[in-house]
Image (cartoon, rainbow, N blue to C red; front, side, top):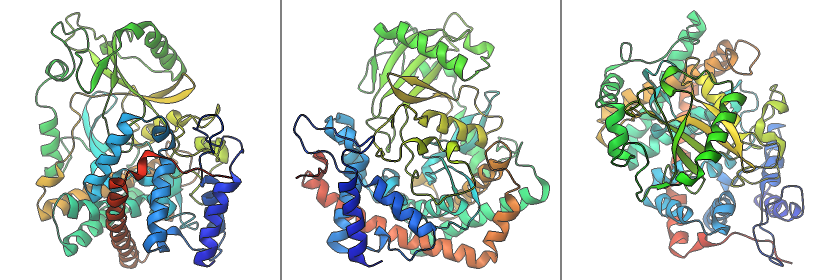
Amino acid sequence: MTRTALLDLLSQGADAEQGGPGAPDHGGDGEAPAASRVEAFTLLAQRRAAGEMVLLPRLLTGSERRIHVRQTIREDHQTRIATHDEEAREKFDKLAASPFSFFRGTALLFYRDMAGEDPWMPTVLSAGDVHPDNFGVVPNRDDVPVFGIDDYDEAAYAPFTWDLKRGATGFMVAAESEGAKGEARQRSTAEAFVRGYADAMRAYAADATEAFDEMRRDNAPPLIAALLDHAVRGSRAAYLTSKYLDDTGRRFAPSKKIVPVSSRLAEFQELVDRYVAENEIEVPPRADGMRVKDVAVRKGQGTASLGLARYYLLIGGADEKGTDDLLLEVKQARRSALAGLVPPSDISPDDHEDHADPSVGGDDPDGGASARHGARIAHAQRVAMVNGGVFYGSVQHDGDSYLVRERSWYRDSVDLTGLSGQGWHDYARVCGRVLANLHARSDEAGRVDHDVEPEILAAMAPLDLFVEDVVEFAAEAADRVRTDHATYRRDHAHGAFSKVDRVYR
């Protein structure tokens, strides 16, 4: 496939989708339909996975690459741009702030550069968006703080190398952008991440401890033990009153980021009751029957998900004074950035919730009546933490799919800007271990039906060559991130993301 053929395929994909099932059209009467290249990239991924020698967008340069980046970001945010969402504009500003912010918020761009890659590699449950800021302190089922992956919005079944490549790239970009580290330190940090993964996978293959392994205060390395200690300073009551509640302690206090909508109590009580029943939630005594005391719209949260609907629910605890109330987050879910791009695997298509409607773009939150994006995310969390938080689940609301989870009062993450050179190595190695645990559990609680650890170890052999390949990939990808970010900043300054691409007659 030549460069011209690649550009032809992608431009034909935009034309072919117009009028098709689920094709996004956010314009008014008589307005040209919004362009989408989802089907074109699905075809590209299938052809590459089948062994065809096809070019990928990562080989584009100059103005062709700049236009591809612009089109992908517009397409990934079609709904939010077309509805003039204020948080979408905030997100575009955030992407311009640094290469790492740009990397965090452009997963679709990253994975379109990998379409159909590594079809021969073992399939696992992939976290989907591995980078240094998506690890942190989270609650387990017993409300004990543990260290793990804290974001599964992009989770999908994919070759295990996809998480490693995005994670290694994320550590390289962050080490420079957040840690001001040079090229040698960036590379050695990425290598530490991959070797931490390999060491843990070797241990799981030998002693099969992945099913009950979790990183707690008593078994964590010093860096993570210090983070866990920092996370539990204070109390649930102090956290709620200082950040969210009014003087009565029974309602949300309005702020720039918290907009109380107390008039919707009945609506969200019905939603919570349905969520508990549909997800078979074993409500602990501390939740006091899941009574909704107040509701608020949460603004300005996250990077990739800015502009998607998000609610906070204050759930009454057992103490009548409200000192042990808990916070539930109800977050609109959308199609995974990996959907349609991963090579085919033995996992049944029915097991891919995003498979239902491949013509729908990433920013269409519901993806049609059969979409179950929230269920996909909740499934990933349950696989990742067999003893995970009790409140993870999903629910449909107003035609959209939502993830439901507890916002723990001790949720915390590593301050990347404060890491020493050795600290970057230590942290990367720990994150590699945590990722290996998720992948190893793919055949325990996930949908992989065979022992995956020996396959992964065989696929990584010889290990030194495998590590070098992943680090080289990450170095090239990090260079693309820097170049793409520079052109994005120029486009953003010109107002390029105030409109969507449309197909005109």
